Length: 397
Image (cartoon, rainbow, N blue to C red; front, side, top):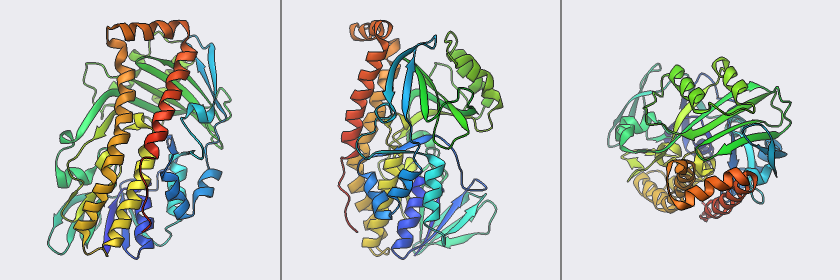
């Protein structure tokens, strides 16, 4: 069967590997001109590690890991208030591994040397028929496939074309995220520094083999609507939000306009009743984004790709609707449990605006013993993430 996959991210590349493994003919279309490198650091946890083992790439991923050695938590003046190991700060337990997104994507792409890629293009129109799907591309000629898989992220083009406007499915968590590269002027060696308070987080880190550093900001959304296509407005919001914080924040904000990889988005989840319609199915963030607040986006992508491809193989492809149903039935409880993590983390971040006894106590403790309180919440989140990351048993296909 000919299967078109939209998106050359973790979900799409993993799906292509398993489909090829089972004898399908996958093609990947990616709007970027080449495979995207760099990016933020991501984690593979719990049951998702089994997918890496079954692909035979676990050791390669570990070798390319960020190897973060520690984290320094600072107050708004830059004074160190707590030191943590890299794994403890990143909520990693046991064999959990952290890697830069682009490095994982390159490892995955290296496993599928004979798969066709269509770079610098995207799907313009999808027409479904009883025996095929006709796909019109923006630049290449129209082609026919047996199935189409939308693995094209939170703002999925395939989802929009087949299921409708994103607003029907997106649930914003009331937070915004901003990441961009800066020179590693602090000479960080596999280290991260972070300032945290209820409603605002700022950090800078540099991982193994990275000549630069990443500046990261996460903050509660204001009442003003932010245009996600207006870079100038976004940067103005970030500058205004972080007024009054010293440490390295003013310097990072000064370097922000010159960053070539500036990223800004609202933290959101995708909730859908069904992930498939006809011969089209969604995967990863396109179907069930849990948001970066969950710490489980990459693991959900890897596991979803493994299950979807495995069920298509078990159904011999022709009974694709049965495969789509089995994919949703297996994955939905796991997805919902992990989406709860994102909602819980967002609620804590947004709690600074609430006026009740518990929140007042939290804010008092943040002023008196911020290091201990932050460490407590990090350890609490680690336990929740570990349980959710292992809340699925993968079938052998």
